[in-house]
Structures are given as structure tokens and as C-alpha cells.
Length: 383
Image 1 (cartoon, helix red, strand yellow):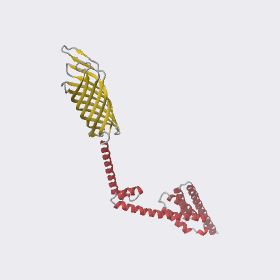
Image 2: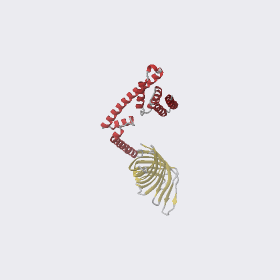
Image 3: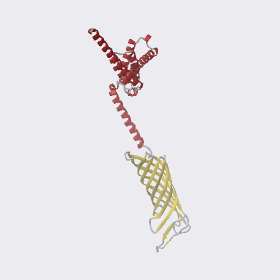
Image 4: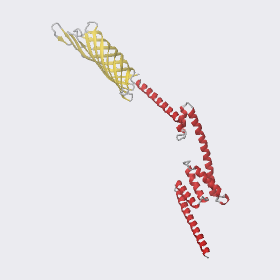
């Protein structure tokens, strides 16, 4: 009798223990299902593993959910591929498709087929990656390295291409340096150099520098300039350039309706005729001097400062030179010109102001004549 009671107690306790395991496994399964629905697939797989440990192994129900969760994880990472394959193999091992719901079995079969296709694609991509790596490694053309790095930025072969990558970087750096050199050279030879042509409004005076004769008046007219600028010294960091400006030829024409002429007689008495018109033609040639250029902005805006010296040839028509109120006398002279210019260049438009002093010898009377000339503004083009 006592033996029967003891057997009954053992049987009952074993049944209760088994029932307790089933409840624990069910609780973990419910947590796994909730985690899956919340797209916490890693957490779902962990709960299913704990349920299977309690049960002593997987069953069709845990395997179905585990395969679903692992399949989602393998879509973004290959870390769980082997675990998914093991779960599929176990599923086919313990599940009899004849007694398993058809729709669920079809779900697992579909995942299996998709996995095989993904593995095939991975194998094909791996072959292509290795072929690209071999070509990049063996070829002297660094373009293959660039193509490989762009196509497989996370490749396992990248460490083996370190020498080729370093060579590629050196090549790129060299190309960059060459491009910078070309850009600097282009900047050196940019806007300032070239021929220029300009027109301006001229104000001009003429004065006899020797006694007893003095002529003094202001004439108004126009001027024309043709010259050439070239820069041979450049400091690109400071955007400062030094060169020379060659004024090939400048012509000015000026006339005045009013003039002052002073004629001194033997007793130093003076008189001033005020009739007629004074006309001045001045040709300046081969004016040369240093020019200083400042790049104001983006190699399109330049400021020039230029002192020059050159020759001149003049023809003057001066009324009443010898005291007659009706007689006009032509004067021809040659001499030198000092010039100072300040100019602004925007692209091809040249605007500035120019001051010149003409020192001329009257070829007839051998007297010294001096003349101030201001041209403002000067407007021209560079070409």
C-alpha cells in the first residue's frame, strides 16, 4: 500500500513539473510573438531560444516563428544566415507536410526558395567582386582601383589594395598640383596684358617759357591713345603685378576761342590781344614707363598706376604772335612728354585720368614752350 502511494506521488509531481515547463515555454513564446509583431526580431529569436531550451528542443510552432524572424533579420545583414539555414533544415526534419497547415508550410517553403536565390546572388556578386579585385591588383591602370573602391566600398579585399590606393592618392595629388599650376599660370596671363585703345576729353595749355614773349591760354578738345601693356613680374598672393606700358601713339586736338598773349617791347610795356582762335595739334609717341597693377577682385577688376616719358611733335596755330591783331602764326615743335596715368579696368573697359606735361622746342624761333595737358576721363577698351 505504501509503495502505491509513493508511486502516485512521484507521478503527480512529475506531471506538475512538466506542466510548469510547458507554461514557461508558452510564456516565452508569447513574448517572442509580441516582439515579432513589434519588429523586434532579435528579441523574438532570443525568447524562442529560451522556450526551446525549456522544452528540450524546437517544435514546429517555435520553428515557424523563428524562421519568420530570422528571415527578416537576414534582409539587412548576413549574420543570421547560417542560423536561418539550420532552422529550415530542422523544420523539414520534424514537420510532416501532410499533417501541417498548408498555408504555413507554403510560407516556410517560400522563405527557403528566397534564401537560396539570395545565396546564389551573393555567390555571383562575390565572384564579380573577386574578379574586380584581381584586375585592380594586377593592372597598372589605377582607374581599376577607383572603379573597385566605388563599386565595393566595404570590400574585404581593400586592405590588400593599400599600396595601389596610396599610389592612386599620390596620382590624384599630383593631378591636383598640376591643375593648380595651370590655374595659376592662367591667372598670371589673365586680363591685364594686351593692346588698348582709348578716347578722352582733353584740356591743354601752352606757355612760352622765355622772355620777352609769353603765351598762355586754355584749349579744349579730344585725344586718342593706342598702346600696349605687359606684366612680367607677378605676386599672386598679394594680387600685385609690375610691368611696363608702351604708348605707341597719342594724338590730341584742342582749340581755344580765348587766349592771353603778352608781347614786351623795349620799354617792357605789355599788351594783350584777344582775337582769333588758338589751335593745338599734339602727337606723342613711344611713351614708356613702369605700370603697377592691383587685382581688385576675381581677376576682372584692375587698378593701374603708370608714370611714362616719351617724345612729342606739336603744331600750334597762335593768333597775334607778333603783335598783329589779324596775323596768325604757325609753330612747329618737338620735345619730350612726361605722363602720369591712373586707370581702372573692368574686363575690357578701361576708364581713367591722365596728366601730361609737354616740353617743346619751337623749331622756328628756337624757344622753349611748355604745356600742361589733362585728359579726363579717358575711356577705352583692351583687346
